[in-house]
Image (cartoon, rainbow, N blue to C red):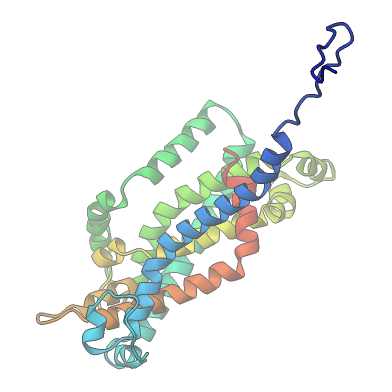
Length: 300
């Protein structure tokens, strides 16, 4: 008997197609993408957190240990740099000065920038678009290029080494940012509620104060936090305009330099002291901050 039978092409059954590899590919992509995303996130966090971690370790080292950059060096943590910094540098006064200038300039920028952004958003046209672009252009201008004219103005107005001079200078840069940011936020906000308020008898100012401003609270908190951080980290404007009476925390780093040595440990301790308030504030307002960025800043 012939075991090998020839197939009749008319009665032969077509072979079943092989299963496609798509389900396996989908299953593999389902866990591969999150893993890659987590790895990328960890890499970005490492890049940003490594300098902070290094600064914290150096601030807890003493002697020759503070001169090294070996992150894996075993050492005994000490608060000596913080105590020495507190005894020799008026850190408390620097903190109060920085807080006054940061809060004052942020409030002034909000007071002028939010109505400006609302007006630009509710009065569309060529002029409004031109003014918005002008605000963006001013914001992109290098701040250090304006320091000399501001120094001469403040000198003639006798506002050097004063809180008023520092607040005015930092407000100028922040007002443009607040107006541009809030304009994008108000443009994306539906006008139905404001129109209803106008029908109910509110004026334009009442619709802004009672309807638009409460709805824009995440944007206001976001821009307030960003403005506060800008002022808190500013170095050049206090370097030019401040003096002994109004010295800010960022300038305290210069006191770690001397003719014979650079006190890296104390400098790192001062950096940690400067970072902690901003970090706490950002964590407390994180929920509003994320909502504001996703709702308004990316809309334009």
